[in-house]
Image (cartoon, rainbow, N blue to C red; front, top):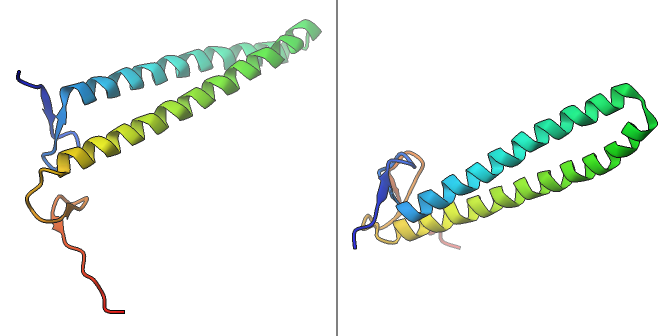
Length: 116
C-alpha cells in the first residue's frame, strides 16, 4: 500500500506522512472553529458590558467561563499538535543516515564531547 507524503513542510526535505498531515489539518481546523466562537463570545460580552443591564451583566459570568474553557481547549490542542509534530520529526529523522541531527539550516550537526 502506497502512503501519501508531504515534502518540504519543514523546509529541509523531510517527508511527512499523509495521516500526520491530516491530523494537523484537523487540529488546526478545530482551533480555528474555537477561535471563531471566541470572537463571537467576546463581542457578546462587550455588548452586555456596554448595556449595563443587570441581566446582561449576569449573563457575562457564564459567557466568560465558556471563553476561558475555550481558551483552555485551544492550549490543549496546540500542546497535542506540538507533541505530534515532535514525534513525527523524530520518527522521520530515525531514517536519516547523515549520522547527526539536522540543524535549522538543514545541515547535519555533530555533538562534540568535552573532556571533564
